[in-house]
Length: 151
Image (cartoon, rainbow, N blue to C red):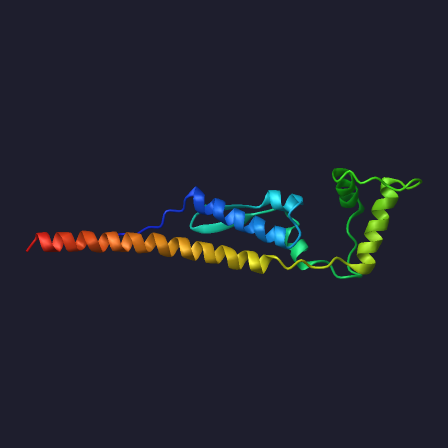
């Protein structure tokens, strides 16, 4: 009996990452740090999607009137994005204003994870089925050759 194994190579991982990047662009997240953080790996028979830790929060959004976003995180974000406060405003006061706005209004969910998972499953299924069909047909051809050669 022969063993058939699927080879997970860098091409499929690149294709998965590219598909996820395209979905992020569709959901208007293409110019964010999130798109740069997306990377697929395969380890111990598991598909692993590596992304920034706020990945799930962008997908689910933030309801109004829940726990406030930490001001320190907002200050870091403001500095990273090089956002300048209005005249007479400090970075701290800008961060507090953003914090209060998020607290009062919330953040709208982007809901991109389900389409990303769906596209990824389609790619993985197609790749595996193509790989397995080639291996199975090669094995059948080998078995037929051996069987015919033994007659």
